[in-house]
Image (cartoon, rainbow, N blue to C red; front, top):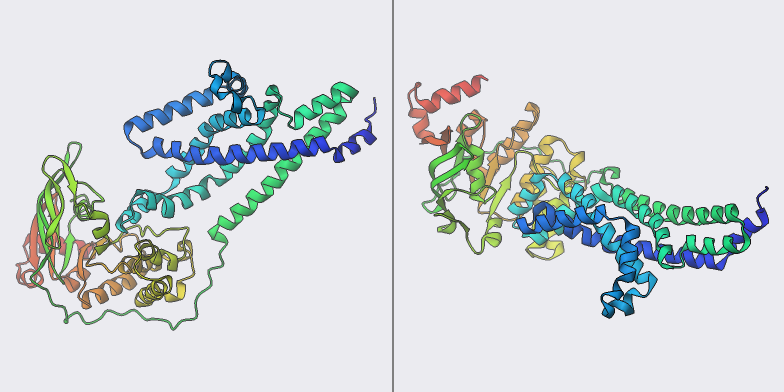
Length: 499
């Protein structure tokens, strides 16, 4: 039997089909939007919430992914039989369908969001913490923009799934596209032609939204940025004269009997250390000696099992049976600039926006003032020309210099460097060390975990050596120079230089 082409073509202008298509689009948009927002909350609860919230989120996802949507639709629509107060809302097929879709899809969308959240590197959380961001600001400014970029293709695919699932809502008599088609072919028996039209309308709806989502993906894809350089005078980084440094008497950092254990391994064994204003202290030692763990306790990137830390003469962090931080920790931690081994720049932001993000969040001036100050910091480290680039367009040395500028933009009292050159190629090490030496010449108080022994000797006022979690040497530059060749710290530095 031949197709009735005239009838099929006439369905292109069928008002009922167009009305049903708009209904499907609206139902899909609302279901996807509410499900995406609620799903993110469920994903957040499951990935980083307290134990009870993780259990509740996992149970929700397990149950509603197990329950067929058709069962959910019929149950919600008939719920007024046991809860009559819900009849004004649930007796309307649109609202009943929307509620059922949202409840069901939230479980699927939560898992998509969880995948996006897990894809955000842990270092991004730590960088936000170092800038003094509380949880809400961290997720809003750093984590969510990155997780959405990762999850967007899957979120878009789930939207397409929702569009197709709306056909099931016909079971509760919602006049969507499939139900309109069924009503037509039960009257004229032109089943194939009508179903072809139904298919065409679904394809159009899906195509329109697929195009919109693809445009959004392209807009969020920072790898498409051409990475143009700014027209600024190039800066040659050179090691300055450090003889102008003056070490004060005020104690800026005081670490007392710090202990930390990971399982059976004692990583920090009652370590005590004092850093004075204007002093540069380098922490050296073999791998696994506890250097990085120690420096990370200063700004609470790592908790402690026992001991106390004072910052600028005030209570800061302690554990005397329970871990405590100062009440104004998130406000004061901005005075501790942190430069990470792996840079931890925010990949969704330009270099300039990376440097501006912290000051803007903390209201450290007008937008114009913050921009000017950020450019000044970038110029200071020789990165102003790269201000409009994204981190993926930079070399390792450029990334680390941008990270230093980001920390300096917060106007810190102390700079913490965790192996700032260990992730760099040998030819890029010099440009980062030159920046650190320049900061030393300007009187910046610094604590540097490093394996660059010659640099440590040249720039440090004091060198601390750790071994097997214990502080085994703590000497000034002059004491090191006068130490005999067989001194423990001299032997280690000579062996490190030989490698």
